[in-house]
Length: 341
Ligand code: MN
Image (cartoon, rainbow, N blue to C red; front, side, top):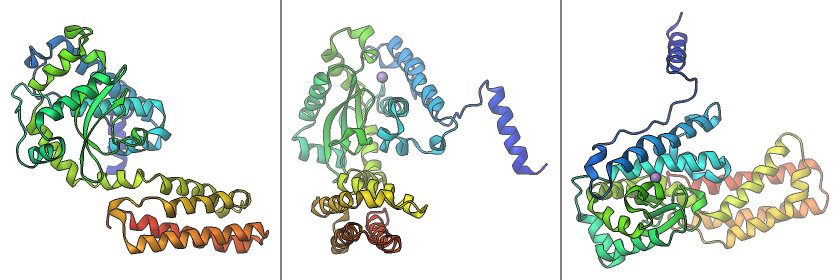
């Protein structure tokens, strides 16, 4: 038996013996402190249930939702960016897993209660003071109706921003709309995070939590967010006019490759309109260049020419030539927005 087959058999045996054949790619992180060590601010029972039951359930259900799908091997960030198309199970449980992992990592019984260095400078520049930032976060937490989180995140423009989002949504997700970026601090305002100790007094909980939020950890999250290629990926993903053009391109070009010209013949007008919206849209800061402006103009000219051909009922080979050229131009734009640029 060769080593490749042997290792596959071993992996299978290990899965079966663990009682399941599901993917166990995502795992519950161990805490760096004990459940009782955040007392009196967060009680031991809340911590134990929150970590070992709630977070564990997100992990279990995420792995269940991913099992046997193409998304099984993807990093969590890739799942979250496209949360809307992946469906509720991945959006809610993937978000739950990511958010709680971040939450545990920025809590500590020996919390460093004030940031320093670049984070403090940027907080002061953006929010005037640490106190006013805390007030904004507490307000975001208090005004979140029902379950959700208050977030401090880094936007693609590398600005610090406060927001709140419902349920387990976070700024990495397309679902976050105008609040896209990488979260560096989150306050869980689901009742399961505080109800045993604080009951209906959410404000007492959000005031107390500052005693165990470790600004050292937040500062580390801040520097890694600033250096992360994910920020550019989010910036591109948040360029909605590009995304919408891409969708029409994918839904017309690929059928044509298979010999089906009906989609492009019925949607060339829509494609021309989307190319015009794209040309007029605001190019995200990182991607602004003469080259991209030229490519966007070429795209608009190409889509308009293609639409004219369709209106004139041109033959398939003419349509093919024109759409293939347009597809190449679109790839130039995609390339100019990739991480290498
Ligand atoms: Mn929670």
